[in-house]
Image 1 (cartoon, rainbow, N blue to C red):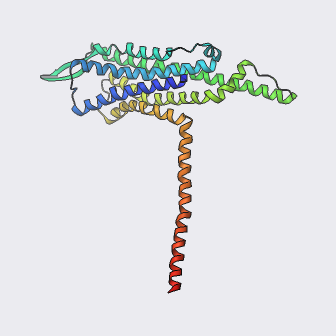
Image 2: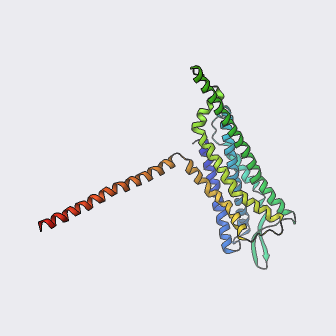
Image 3: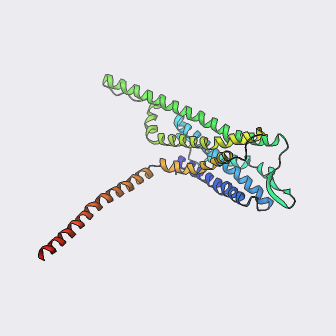
Length: 302
């Protein structure tokens, strides 16, 4: 399995964690209005909810960094020995599990009214909620976004420089009638243009989808803790907070669209359907004509 497929596979696993341990429990919680379960389940659900957020985010980060290494430092990537374990993927999961540990101590099953229990967070007022949301936004959104932006900018600059050098050398070879061998730096463009440009594009689209889905969520979260008059009960706030979950739906769709077989398969199915409709029309017209001729001959005999 290629490195890119390993990253995408683990990204899909992280999205499944988000779907099963973040979206589903939250949906059941909203239906019942109160968290139904013991204290251990409360802490575990809150822990896994943040694990999914961290894993999905940092899997995108390590994927982008890997593309940066493959494009900008291809010799370093080539000289790496094929290890049994993918180190960047293991680091992403380790960071996700470790950074989510505070959830086990922040959330618990508490009594909010006589005989009424819910899974709530206990913060030191008044700075506790602000510190919690600000820290979460920093490590899950701002730092990853800055990292992947820097990597993508350097990747684009490297591709642009390499393509420019290749074009210049090809033009010089055409002018004097002799073919000049490409430098090692420029010759990398051949492999990049064929096998790695698509993965770079897919990574860019995944990063854009992540930014579009998660930016409103963290903006609303920061607004709600830093502004006491924030309209947290409005429908707009709810929609913007739910928009973050769409990122886990978008990632598999993006990978499906960028695979080689899916567009060809879709085009083949559409062409076969179109051809089938065309072939059905002559068959129907032939059937009508034969029926008409049989009726006509029958009337002539009479």
